[in-house]
Length: 303
Length: 258
Image 1 (cartoon, chains in turn blue, yellow):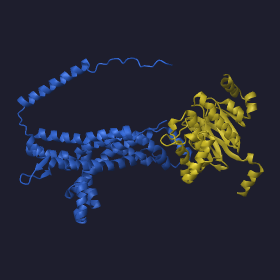
Image 2 (cartoon, one colour; image 1 turned 90 degrees about the vertical axis):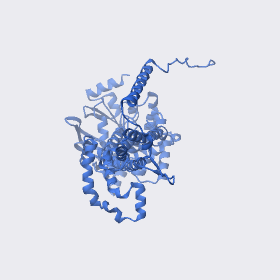
Image 3 (cartoon, chains in turn green, blue; image 1 turned 30 degrees about the vertical axis):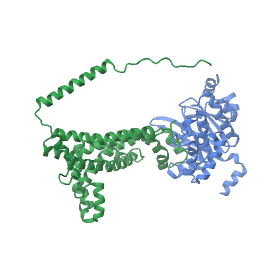
């Protein structure tokens, strides 16, 4: 075969279609109209500088820079997201395994948990659960007296990990609410992942005499993890965003503190737009990171 | 124990390795197996055939309890099969199984597939498991693929790995559930060759298959099933040339006309 096998000439595809032009025009018109409303109809004086002071405060005399309410809120939101992710993952995996267990009791328990949470609005759930935790569980565990029980050194570490110690019980209540709430969704992801594995895998594993635990740990879970990871990553991003719900029970995270700032300054637009940008800056890198994991981390071997 | 040994010494081929006694199974009201009685002796090769839906697969899957049954009992080497975790592990040590769709574990390499059972169930050392695995991979002639993942092998190679995986448990009986049905035609003979070698090596085998050539070559006993019942049990010469039941005759005429 001497002649080169060339591909047929590529068809020219138009990059910008008529539809694109139509959509872009509509967007431009909407933007101009919005600008017009804001500038000429709405009576609102923008003062970004004032609100920015609540992001970073510069001491006028020494010139030192301090993080202000917004950044403190971000730190608190990150703490909630970090611990919430860990606890929710543990709850989700345990409950997900219960869902596929042979025991009717475990199956029903897990099912009840998931259905309860999925069919109650998060806000309602958090109010109900919060009053139960903060009034019953936390005093029971003695967690409301940590300032007396721990040494100053331990308290300093705890401040980094969990935020101001005087608000620890409040943080903990918010954290547990969030984790229990998100755990239900992770349970469903884990269940779906396990059930996506072919029945033949269970049978082959049982046929070589693996115990039920070994079937799960050596054969099913490692494979299920590949199905589970992408939606799980998505759920963790959701968790970061959902953490704003606990502002309702006065956990001093980003949304709660933004309410403070917007009430104090009365510059609602600037305050909330900054907060929107901050949430975006937390979630978007996570999304990009997880996409990378998916592409490079999982060289999937499948039959 | 001495009794047992004597029995083996006196006539090893008469040792009853696998015995079905009045086994019955239902899915709700549907009767999947009815009054199954069958005895397989050590070293015997039994080929089970019959139309699809006749209960062949269900029957052999009852042996290692991948299916439960409601009536009768199954004895393996004289011990009644029970459904608690301890006896299940024992049964599955004694009974190897090869599936239609190979069911290799796709997330680990070929050799790891072979080592998993011996390490977890037989508690052998990693080193010994590896030696066993290589030994059996050589027997099925794919030792050079040991480090590959199952998806990198052809269907025929995968099925040979699956056979080796079962052999690594050093089973007393091997069950084959339509081992060549999912294979491309050119892959079938490679798998059948391995099974013939296994039979010649004296392995007790129970094979569900439509490969009548293989059946004629290795079977000591043919079993024909229809509608969840065993219709006919006969040596192959008799079975193929002079079947007693009309249903067997009809089935054979359909399957052998090609």
